[in-house]
Image 1 (cartoon, rainbow, N blue to C red):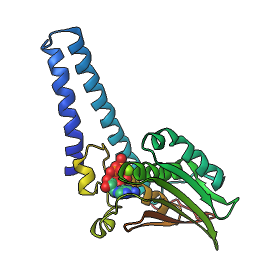
Image 2 (cartoon, helix red, strand yellow):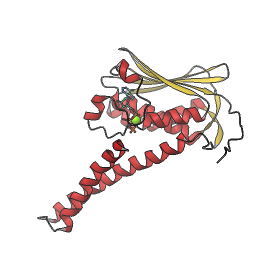
Image 3 (cartoon, helix red, strand yellow):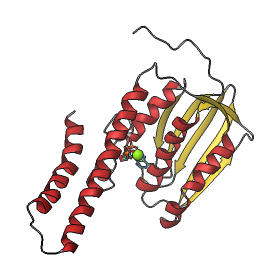
Length: 229
Ligand code: ATP
Ligand code: MG
């Protein structure tokens, strides 16, 4: 709650501040007004992302959250997601590649939720993989599981931080000070989503590469998920 209050209060203070200037007619020109409105609007959008993420987090934390299952061609799905990052990766001069060791690989998942996991992992790799030149997504069928890794060759994540990455609100010091705008909920949400699918996720990092590995069962065993209230 302390973390959230801080992250909500900061943009809110600035929204109130800039709207206050307009309310009190403390502006010289129409341009001033437009600038203040623009800042307040941007901060409000930022707050919305945080509140949406928090809501999503509390939802996926509940083990009774139902999954909307669909059978997916994993290779096609990953290519599609990678394509959505083309603009951003071009801008950062990073190359995104999907490598399917097993293809086609069919897997039963909640597509929207799993898309959210990959969106966060890829955007993290682009955002925090400083000095990196590529992001690779590798997938293979191993027994009754799909093993999927999202790798990038950026700066190493310190050993101490690796254990904490999946904790809500955790951000490695350097990215907190840098204004990357994240809240540290992405990996906590990702982990909860993978857990809901009966899988697990972990991270490894060395000087050559950082990778996030997911093990997901190919099929969901539907148990009665209705728990006692
Ligand atoms: P959000 O995803 O909620 O917008 P966030 O990206 O900061 O915010 P997480 O996705 O949970 O939160 O990531 C937590 C932290 O882990 C990041 O702030 C960053 O410091 C570190 N991190 C994540 N992925 C990588 C990566 N590929 N390379 C280096 N550091 C990473
Ligand atoms: Mg993130």
